[in-house]
Amino acid sequence: MIKKVLIANRGEIAVRIIRACRELGIETVAVYSEADRDALHTKLADEAICVGPAPSSESYLSMDRIISATIVTGADAIHPGFGFLSENSKFAELCEKCNITFIGPNSKVIASLGNKQEARNTMIRAGVPVIPGSNEAVYDAATGASVAKKIGYPVIVKAALGGGGKGMRVANTPEEFEQSFLTAQKETQMAFGDNTMYIEHFVQHPRHIEFQILADAYGNVVHLGERDCSIQRNHQKMIEESPSAALDEELRRKMGDAAVKAAKAAGYVNAGTIEFLLEKTGDFYFMEMNTRIQVEHPVTEWVTGIDLIKEQIRIASGQRLAFTQKDIHMEGHAIECRINAENPEKGFRPSPGTITDLYLPGGKGIRIDTAIYTGYTIPPYYDSMIAKLIVWAKNRKEAIRKMQSALGEVIIEGVDTNINYQYEILSDPDFLSGNIDINYIEDRENRNR
Image (tube, rainbow, N blue to C red; front, side):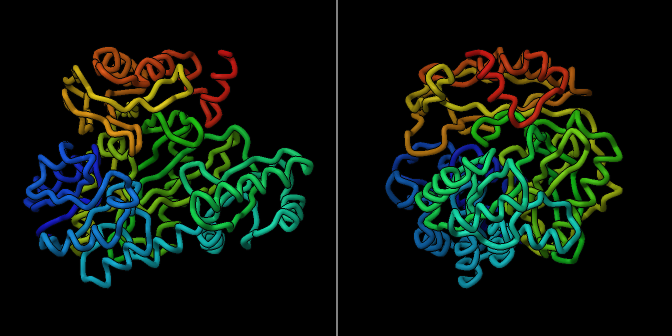
């Protein structure tokens, strides 16, 4: 069993990992930037070590500093959390070379699935449904236009090595293609230092459905049901729930089988997420595989009763899965709201600053993952998410009411948040009826203009 874990992350996910390690009797090491000296994860871990100045490029993204901190503190494993270095194949490879256990898949699998074109081809060979698109990398607009003509409009231009909504543009007609391609490629070059693009048919008004999988090193792979992540803005998820109101048992079985098939085809080991686009017809397509723990993992934990962080650590320690697919049952309904320090009325402008007063709700079926406290200063250098509020109830209707009640109790003074914005969504007739897709927020904002 792993004895000491260094958490190469910050914020609520670092706190979440520390707590899971405690329950497993594993020591923890927190790393922090100079801006995070007083952060909660530094106080909760057994040890804490500074890895550089505030900019993430000089601290949380510095592979050499993270590895040095691991060696100095005697940690034998690294948990990357999400974001930062969590899907960096070079970092995972560096861990392997230094004989440090990387709590996640191996570097080759991360590299393979991180390249969207290569991942797509892997799924095609495995028989997993994929969106019609280019089978080879595209580097110039003329070649891209030829590919788009064969696929059929509308098309979406995507960065092969991208993520987080960057390097993506939709072209509805041939006349729009060149500008869309060049804009997406320029953004890709700036964000990822790479100009490799690929093109696929643009699926209009789908739902974003993802399946959580767990895979051990002995060929055992299971899925833990789906999460509906359709409520998103600029490709950034805002509200997630499990199960999805759009899936019946037959469709859940088909998508779950496809998710397991995808993981096996990739030779995957550890926790991962297969993301699909689901059309109203019931057709679904592989979109990508995330090779890390997801922000929204708590909703799956609540409906299945399985602690995903602990399972990650057990798998990385060489243990077999202690359950099979038939042992997994989804019970009740869970919803997660991401609470961000931002102002929706001012274009979702980030709102760093000091929290002067704080009250967070509790009670049966309410969970809060956060690292904030009264007097804590939210730095301006990182992601604006400051907490996740998760609820569980017997069914979706009760879960929505519980979330409305919980959101109404939250008090965060000193900074702006998106709490009222989320409360409005949870009260919207379309959301209440389950009539949502990935364009929901965009359509809602257009209606309210």
